[in-house]
Length: 332
Image (cartoon, rainbow, N blue to C red; front, side):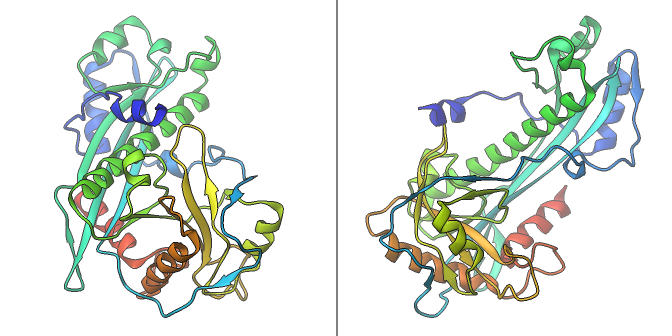
């Protein structure tokens, strides 16, 4: 129910602000008492100290297996399309020391037709301002009234914390991330409602009831700050050889839809760290979890070539996913 309520939530409309410099000019003209910021500063996504701490989350093993399993059969290309999104956010102005952040999110599905990638339907490209409205003065409130502003205030913030610049920036970054996930979820739901070809989603599919329960959607997670594993399974994860997978587990995060998931090693980890070349795959729950995991693993292994170079995540990234990101950067 919580997932459905989140999907129905209303959001401020996107603003016709094509670039960061456009956002700077708009606020400089409208908001009194603003302080200009360094336009060459890195995006908030590159700042340190705003990432989630690594942790291991217990997961229920649903496959009758205790050892790593070599994926049987040759890699089989099966994905008809690939979905990914990007985001960028920057502080555009300070009003009495409180940062106002501009964020832009984009998402696209690239469909494979005759071994070439083409854009499916229309990409999503949205821009908004993000600010803690409770910490802003009345004049700034009025100046922002007709702009698309996401309120990043939290009900549990006190008057002091709500003005802490690092806290404000962190809350804005999380809000931009949620908007990017919403854009990706919107496209994935459209695909599931209209198409039957398998769709590789870069990231988790559990944020949408529609996507997480549809057989065509496959989530491929590259980041492993959270490991879903029992004490026994984590040993298997770290010891996987290329082409091997762990037993299937059931993941049921709070306020998200349960999915079946497993870890798959795409490349030989020799001379690399223990998580090199490992992805976590998510699919809809099914009665024959082992057979489904083997089938989908063959699909994912088939995307190992061509390499997604020069991206630093090439050991875990499918080339069409990198192409989605390059396409979105080109239109941004």
